[in-house]
Amino acid sequence: MSDEKKWSYEFEKDKPITAGKLLLSEPFMFDENFKRTVVLVCEHTEDNGTVGLIINKPINLRLNDVVEGFPPFRSKIYLGGPVGTDTMQFLHRIGDKIENSLQLAEDLYWGGNFEQVKIMMSKGQIQPNDIRFFLGYSGWSPGQMVGELKESSWIIADGTAKYIFNSDIEKLWKDVMRDMRGVYQTMAGYPESPILN
Image (cartoon, rainbow, N blue to C red; front, side, top):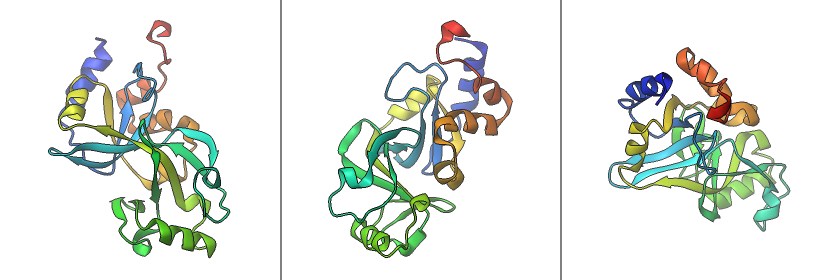
């Protein structure tokens, strides 16, 4: 284990996991599902485990390609994770104008009334930069994420709406690392393969 990873483990293991936090995969994670990913934590409890959405994996589909009955809407689809890829999740910054939304951070909400979203889109009350759609989600059983943090597989950062709605998604992993400064700024420059380090 490198000095950077030892330091990261000591620093990360006591940080709490809560809804609205970001989980950044450690620089050399080999799991193709999560390599260089940024996961927004949507739910975390000791009894139910952790549910999150990968926010930096756009896929080559549009909303109207995968959901029937939606009004024409120019919005990308993202792969939220390897679980339940036949389900649709969404994040938005419309607030409680969408019923049953759960606030994760300032100007950042998860889910809500899907039929209401369709109606608001058809009336032009939701713009493409107000909402993000995800196929599937990421899930960890109770205790699993805590164990992965102890193994230094993840780095915890604060989630903000700007990372979801205003960021260059292709560079998001590096941008969040750089924003955290210190050793993370150095880690942002690591090559994907440790052999090249």
